[in-house]
Length: 86
Image (cartoon, rainbow, N blue to C red):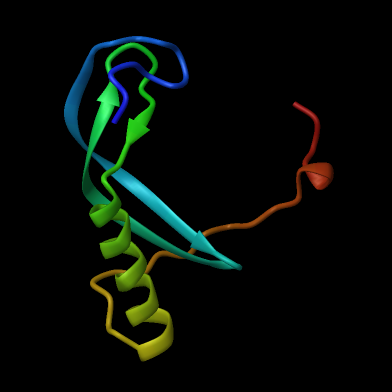
C-alpha cells in the first residue's frame, strides 16, 4: 500500500475493524469486523486483497450454494426522485 492516503494525502493510518457492504447486482452481504487500514484524517479505508477475496467467496457460497447465514435484515429501498422534500 502507498504510504499516503489516496483521498486526502494524509500519512497516518490505524488498524481498524469496520463494517463492509459487498454488493453484486441487486444482492448484498454485510460483513462486520472486517480488518482494514483506515486513514486517521478522512477515514478512507484500505483492505488487503485476501480479505476482499474471502468476502467475495462467502457471498458466492451464500447466493450460489445456499449457505445458511447468521442473520438477515430487511432493507428499505427508495428512489431519490420520489422522496418528499425536506
